Image 1 (cartoon, rainbow, N blue to C red):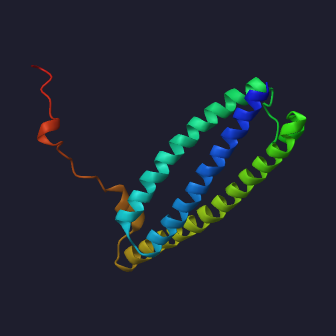
Image 2: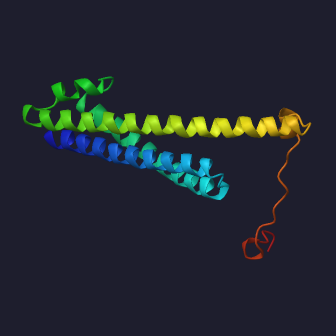
Image 3: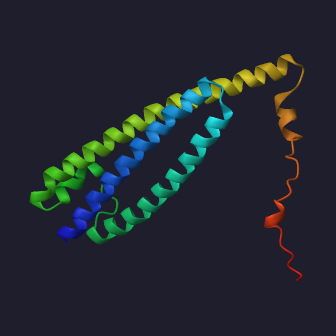
Length: 158
């Protein structure tokens, strides 16, 4: 059982590291929005998407481990009380680090969201000033059809 608790704490530490990386990406996102750099923003969004897949995998592992430990529906602040006595301090530290990482991530995510919303409002205002209704402009937009590279085409009839 102790091994499972150690695995669970290790997983929470991984989660904390991923949240720290997400916080860094949110900082980068704010910077790219501020610099009006759409290509850099696209790159940050791709990294963010990859990291979110990693987080999804960690959540699945967390669910399995918490079920093994009987910690389903146990809040994080009660985790240390459910650990073996010699792991309680480690659990408290891990939970504290995880909460701190989440708090930092949320603050950077809120900043990035505000920056994006501000720019979207500015774009809407620009379109309105130009005599275009932004809602109607978005409805009629269709991306042009794209042809795959010749090497990617396959003749399935062959």
